[in-house]
Image (cartoon, rainbow, N blue to C red; front, side):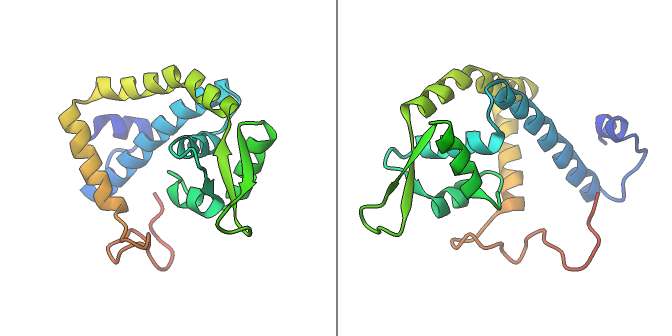
Length: 172
């Protein structure tokens, strides 16, 4: 079915349609990540840092480190380091929570907003490239199918139908 994938991976056949779908998803995600990496690199920022700034932009009051970690597109084991680097560059600031002094909240600064505004045309160009490859209905269908894969319950715990496997195996 996927001639482009076969050529890209230099592979003549796949174990199953599901194996081919999994590899297609991985290759497509990699292509999008590479495009976003280029955009972020042009602005001296990482995708993870960009993601944190976008999260903080949505809430002027700021978020705790734990809340930022829950909202990340790609999970990061070291959210503190992401926040530290953004703070060092003056893109965010941290302050003590008024409700709980043990908690610090990160807020985006004017400089952080300015950087996101500067990046927006380049990020929109990546999205426009995707839009040129599929219709809105196809994008909605892709979203629906992807959501089936990463569906989570209300506690953000992987459901019993997750893709986690016990034991070795599963590598592409």
